[in-house]
Length: 281
Ligand SMILES: C[S@@+](CC[C@H](N)C(=O)[O-])C[C@H]1O[C@@H](n2cnc3c(N)ncnc32)[C@H](O)[C@@H]1O
Image (cartoon, rainbow, N blue to C red; front, side, top):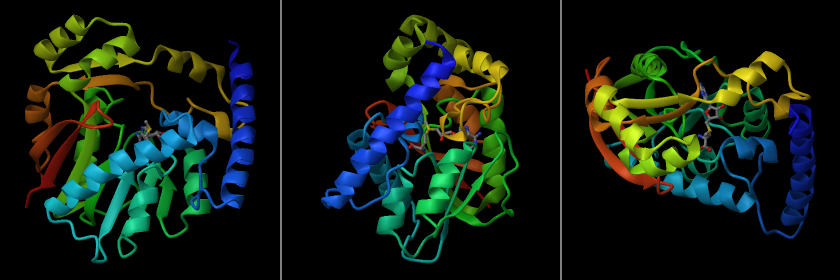
């Protein structure tokens, strides 16, 4: 379908969902802000029900693991949601941990517009695709990120680990979701590659990365109809599907003063792994 028609369709979906949200709120069925449908779709949630479900099922293991690793949300700690999207996780974190000072960043300006409007207590900003982030060094007790490292190539992974290490406090915790061996079959389906090829890449180089082929085409076309339906201009040229092998994690994540504390396989949305890291002294 023509790109402009797709953008028009996204605007129509936004309008329909706005009407749905209006009535859901009116009848007291929901009591929280819902991002525009086009923002939700960028986090792969097509419906409000899926937005709620994926938010809760990603928030829960992250919040549980963070507390297990010593993060105390009842104190005035600082936590950063990197690649916050439409607040899928932030919605839950801000509701359950009002004492924590939350920060959020995303390359997508329309997501940050939503956060600023609906979560004014969160310190949010539009960030660049590559570091640095506009934060001073050694200040965060916790950084978490859902579904960003599942799209980065090896170089982008490395520069972000270095940047997270810079802004984390000593003993600060970093929780990242990634696609690992657990997700090979589903990534193979989505990328139209064979699971064997992905396994081979993991054995060879520790990482399977395939660029989104639509991204370059869209970026060449330039601006979208509106900021709300722009899905390409803020990404760098390398953005796609990434699968990481255990060897890659052990070698590349135990780096820049970070130490891998553990990997919980398949715990996120029945496909992603959750990696826990700590910044060493
Ligand atoms: C798949 S979505 C996940 C959003 C949210 N974490 C969630 O789970 O609902 C990935 C998000 O990361 C953002 N993102 C991708 N690359 C980024 C980068 N280099 N810096 C900041 N945000 C980024 C995207 O704009 C998008 O909102």
